[in-house]
Length: 627
Image (cartoon, rainbow, N blue to C red):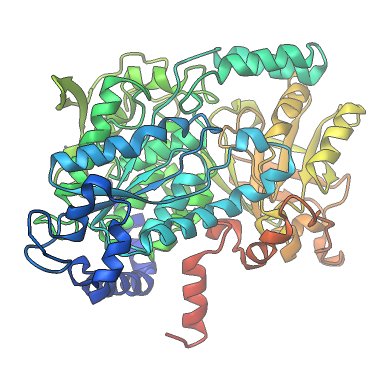
C-alpha cells in the first residue's frame, strides 16, 4: 500500500491549520458534555428516569437501571445497561425512507441480544426533492437540512443515551443528521441506511422520454408511466444523485458498516446488517472499553476522504454545500479550494447515471464502494488512518459482508471490477479527474460538474438571457425565445433570496436545445440537482444576487464565457459602471415561506454551506472578541 499522496497530505495539513482554533473549541465543547454530570444516566434523578422508562415495556426495568434488583432505583447497583438512541427519518411518502417503518422493532430486539436497550429518541422531517422539483416546496428543501439538524439535537437532548443510530438516506436528511449528531458529538453514532429499490426502467430510456415530453412529442400519461416504471417501489431512487452520494459518503467517512450502502431494503443481508449495526453501536458506546465519539471520529481526514470519494465516483454537486456545512458542525473549515485541488489528482472511476447508463445496483454489483475505496487506498489516494465505527480505522473497512447462517461474515472487498463499463481501475479511469470543478472570475465563484458533459462543451461563450425565476425560463422555452446560442442566467435563487431551490426541471429543456445544435449553458446562484447532467451549468454562484453579487448586474446580450478547462467564469462587460442590484422580487408569501424568513436572513453563502452555518457564526463571535 502506497503512502498518502503528497498533494492530499498538503490539502489535509492546510485544512487542519485553518481549522485549528475552531476545532479545538469544538472538541473542548464535546469533552465538557461528556464529563458533565447531566450526561451520566446513572446519576439522573428517579423522576427523570421514570419518564424515560414509562413506555419502556419489557425494557422498563433495564432502562431504570435495576433489572434483577428487588426494590432498586435509578443510580443504584451496577451501571445501567447501554441505551441506544434511534433518530429516524421514517415516512411512507418517501420511497427511500419507507423501509424504516419496521426498523425500531428490529433495533430494540437486536439491542436486547447484547444486553442493551434502544429507544426512538426522535423523528426528523424528510421531504422529497423529486416531489417538490419546480414547485414552491422546493424553497424549503435546503433550509430543511438545518431543521433536521435541530430536530436531531432535540431528540438527543434528553441525555439518557450511550450511543445513537441515525436512520436516513436522502438529500438533506443525511447531512442534517450528521450536523445534529455532531452537536452531541460525545456520543458514538452509526448511520443505518435502507438501500436502493430494485432496478426499473433503464435511466437512458427515462431521460429520453423526459426530453420527448419537453419537445411535446409524448403526452403526460406517457411521461407518468415512464416515471412510475423508474420509481416503482420502496427504496432509494437508483440514479447517482444526492441520496446515493450520501450513502457513498457515509461509507467512505467510516460511519456505515462496510458494504451497507447499496444492499436491497428487504433482503436477508440488509436485515442482518441492520442488526449488526446495533451490536456494533453497543460495542463502541460511550461507557464501553472502546468508545468512539462521533465528534472525535470525524476529523479533517474524514472530510478529505469524503471529497475524494465524491470526485472518484462523480457524485452530487449538492455536496459542495453539504460537506462544508457538515465539517463546520465539527469545527472544521472546509472550502471549495480544497475540492478544486483534490479534483486535479483524483480520477473518475465510476460511470453511474447521469454520468453513464448504469444505476447504483449495477454499480454495486460491479464492485461498488468497496472496490473504489480499496483501489484508492492502495494507491495512496485515500487516507486509511481515518477513524471508523468498524475496525481500528478506515483501512480495516476494505471488506464486504456476506451471510453466514444468521450472521454476517466478512471477505475482502474486490480488487477487480466486474464491469469496466461501470467501474474502472486506476490504470484505466473513465476520466483523469472527477469532473467537479470550481470556477472563478468577475462573476464570482461557482461550481460545475462536467463528468457527463461532452468535452466540446467545456468552454462556451454566448450572449446572456437573464431571468429572475425558473418559471420565466420555461415560458421563454415554450415561446421559442431560447432557440439560439445562449447562456441562461437565473438569479435571485441563492440561500438568502429564496432558500436556494434546485432548478432540475430545467435540465430536459436545456438538453433539448443542446441536442438541436445550440451552444447552451446555465449560470445561477441557485442549485441544480444532484443528478446534474449533460448541460454545462455554473451553479452555487456567490456572492448571490441579493448579497450584491455581480450576477445581479448582468443584462440580456452580455457575452458570458464559461470555461471549465481554465476554471473561469467571466462576463465581457464593465460592471463597475452599473449599479449594484439586490432587489429581486422573490415570492415570500404562502407555502410556509414566511416561516423560513429568519433562516434565509441568517444563511451563509454557498461556499460556507448555504445555511445557518455553525462555523460561520463561531468565526463571527471570535472576530467580535467574544468567547
